Amino acid sequence: MKFSNRNASKGLGGIEQLLSDLGSLLSSKELDSIPQIRDVRERLSDGVGRVRDTVAHAAEETATRTRDAARVSNEYAHEEPWRVAGAALAVGAVIGFCLARR
Image (cartoon, rainbow, N blue to C red):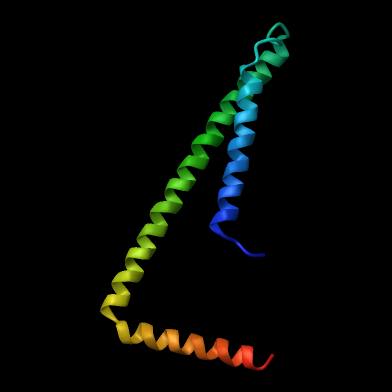
């Protein structure tokens, strides 16, 4: 399975759409005359808020970790350019060998 930023944004967009739909359902006060539905609506509203906070925190954490990894990789590439070039050459040779055997 191929994972890309587009797939991740689709997934987050789907979650946002689901949360939006739930929010509009929860904001409908037509069924508040039934106490059980009102209680379920309140619990769902609390759950949606927690999920939204969790998703936002996870996205922020992922972005922070990605920036840190990119910064560390950039520093290493500037400190050890010949090692990076050698590793790139080795990976290129392995991929070329594998493709040539097809």
